[in-house]
Image (cartoon, rainbow, N blue to C red; front, side, top):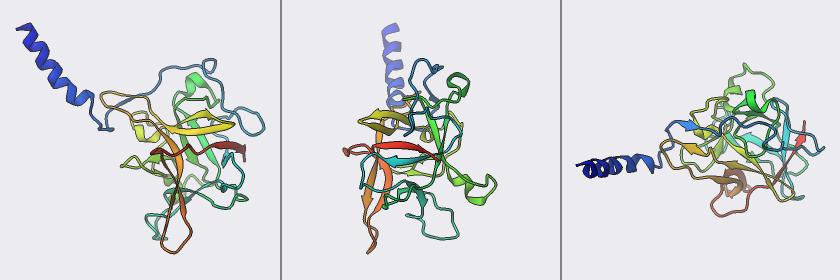
Length: 221
């Protein structure tokens, strides 16, 4: 009888344990100190700090400029731009971002490698209508990064990203690590080139299929 109960328990547990539903509660990496993980550095060699503003720029010359918010899907000018794209002009630094760690009480003001963070485009006015569409978030299909997130909500796993060393710079990774009960697929962020009618390709920030990561550096604004 005990064996039967055990088997039934396993059968009932498996569907939820291996579900691909990402709406379950998130357990982010626990209390990690700044001594455990080195800081991410800007182009001047200084540690990135929470709440300060930085331009996200490609490492490779001639591969475009910084990141901005744009209207790709919804082109209605009455609506706030919510799609994150790369400016094709390498002379354009884009729009600066701010970083907010998941556990500021443990990591302090430093942005650490491979630690969960919120990424938010700087908005001069926190009360402006479009200020609510500046925080990075994976879309519902887990394909594109859009500006519909919220800062500091631990149980919304689509809001959390990481910065990891990559080559001579860094890469963004969508990888909230542990969701109970669900299976998380970690993805590098890449620049996806997409044709938009007769216009030049739109360069959207997206989750990688098999593409190489978007190699970036951080310049203090």
